[in-house]
Image (cartoon, rainbow, N blue to C red; front, side, top):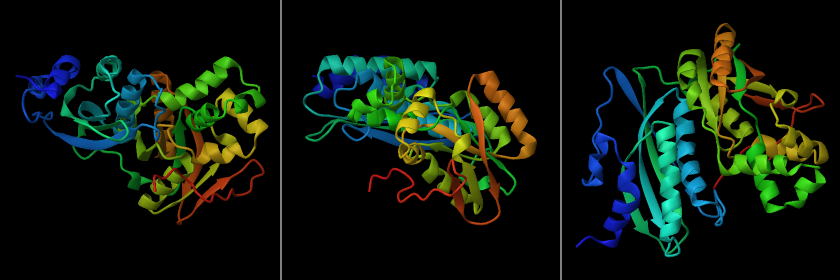
Length: 328
């Protein structure tokens, strides 16, 4: 007789595991054969209720956020998605309606980003609901874009817009902030949507692989992740906040509350890509980004040294007591 866990997998997750490597989820493991001459790129990330998402967030969005966080890591390395493993810890309150929505969202993104479910595990937890995903990607041997490749003279670029997710979280916690900033309902929804559902820049992966000197996905805040990239590369970096790409909603909030500029710089969940690019490769990367429909903004430069400087609107360095989000 099938166990409750077996029935759960059969109903909600086996229909998603159509790739032959998943073996129909009837074995203890999956088996994959990377393309000839390719390297495997491995990453893992997770989301936890009341830490990365609200308890009343839609189940399909929770699934998508968990997968997209991992896809963002792969994109920053220049890797194309190959597949993923799912570990799901469910409290007793997670009913079949919630699971059906979760599986639907997960399946939709797995298909959209061509990253199939290969296997995983389901557990009951007396604590909060958590979703952990390990994703795999491939790229030609020796071409992964590391954090450590930035060189003096490189330009610093970033995709999309910065700070929307952190400001969306602030609005979600305190809706009056949107009113004070004069945000329209659509602008408020935009910020909150960016927190709920990131947009991994998978379409730019191949161009980053061939054009970027170094890259990192911005999951813990622009300032902190820039510091990580600079430290790994052994260089100095300087960016100007006047050049940061901000959405209209973010501009309104910062104009109303100037202190929110630090939130823009240090808040997590952007899932944009920060990269160092040589002047010779910059134009080609800009062209590729435009073709992919992804905004790409130049915000600073790399130089010799070991400092990171963030210049504010008054052209003076901004001091940040905590440059990035940290769980600890």
